Picture 1 (cartoon, rainbow, N blue to C red):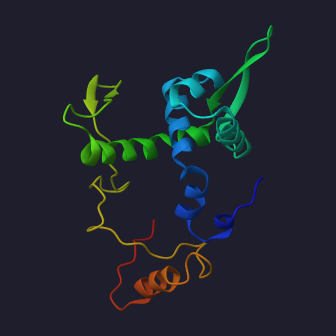
Picture 2 (cartoon, rainbow, N blue to C red):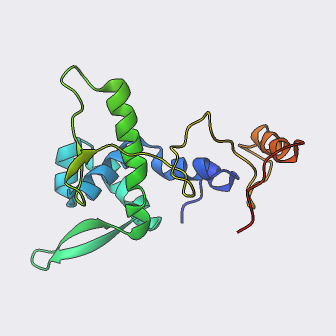
Length: 177
């Protein structure tokens, strides 16, 4: 697997954006998760150079986000499918889409809609607490150190800040389960 400068940063956001922070990678995943899975179709849809597309797809396969599958023997043709790891990026894409729709949609409105197949209604994504269902916001959450946290490159200021929050008098601790 390719090692990059952010791969060793003790931050899940740094590690995830190391792979997914490139705009082309996000758009490739958007397309694959929406059903555009063939190399030529991806290149045509995105207007991306074949060299850049091949490099991004190769990294996504290397990271276990996509798999290449043969769909035709003669001539040999392959397409890309999301792995379970890749499918878990869908909520991330929905959150980016919702933010983009809110702040950058043109006068005609958002360019796409999301329909929930379970109820048949158009919807928007909501990030909610897994315990009480309340929507999560910057104002009603805080970050605390996790078991893999450490201070180092990429967290020299953040690491001590998170530790201080947990060690602060009166800091709320979650109830034991």
